[in-house]
Image (cartoon, rainbow, N blue to C red):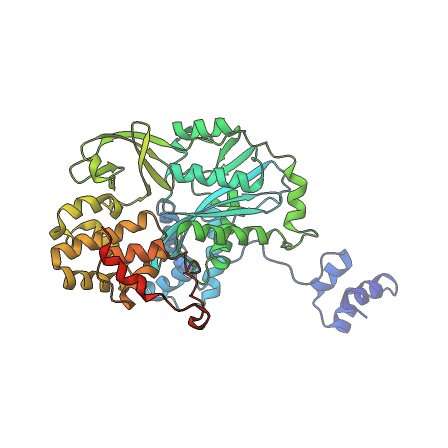
Length: 496
């Protein structure tokens, strides 16, 4: 029988007194009295927990913790650090668990590093999306490069979109939104952001923000509202914060490789589409099934895409280049000195003279780079062949040449002399204007095999490359032909 029950039954039913019950159970008289009065039985936590071994160090600990209030959050004292400092600096010999227990309650009392709780939410379908940037390494055309990747995620369905860029500038930011809206087939009425500088010019008190002018126009065009997190509060858009890590671990391990950025984005897009068949933990339907429910509630896309282009005016300098956003882009050398207009897109630059487009380049986001199209300089180099080996556009181009082109150049120079050989070789390079690179290189290799030492031979191979089957039919067997009339040949001498 339980001791508590035995005491109460013995006293109330059998009339035993306190002394008798004390002798029978071995408990003190005070304990018997408590059981009779019905007071709580067993262990009772103290109202105040003393720390006898730690007592003389409490003031020191409190001082350290109070000083943390003015220090960076990531450099506050942890319980382990407090214990180590007490042992090293003050000769504390007690246990670490005692220090941990005191520090936990002391931080709570001082309001330092208090643990935060989260509210379980159930977002509305098709109402909110979250946006964030991440960074990862990729290999483009054999070169390892650090890229930025844009993420947009539906709070309701979990469907997400990821796209790579060379930078986080505003044009890339807008371009990523345009592709994301196309991917989702609509626009979330509310998008949640960090206080990123491409959208926010100044953070005011509370939720108030002064937005960038360009972002305000973009937001108005697509008719969505922007909601910005409190500073240093990424958990307010925890879904997309998690997506950044998920995409890096799943889409970028091992390090992705592609010939160019567009190819890399196509690979990632296929993975985003495949994720739609995934069933998230705790859900009874797939991501795509939830997404189909919310798709009809998204805002419709406008008829025309937002014009995400900047325009600048300039002049082609003596090097036939135009300075655009701190980089030089080439135009055909005959346009040196002309006034030009440049259209800056997120991924390319187009250069116009009047209404005529004279050059298109992949956009570079570095500084002081020369983005040169070698074809723009071939006529100029043909006039000055001795500048061939030192010409910057040729030196850049030669890095990606096949060995067969170098072999052909050497053969031309041996056969014709250096000056004439280079001029004739430039004529071969001009073939890239009319033929695919693979066709030109195949013709060059064939020319080397057949000891051709002039551009006319290479051009002949290119012209007749598709006429392999258009050969002259062989003559019939000699035995089936009538014998020739040789007497006619003697009459040819008298013909005037």
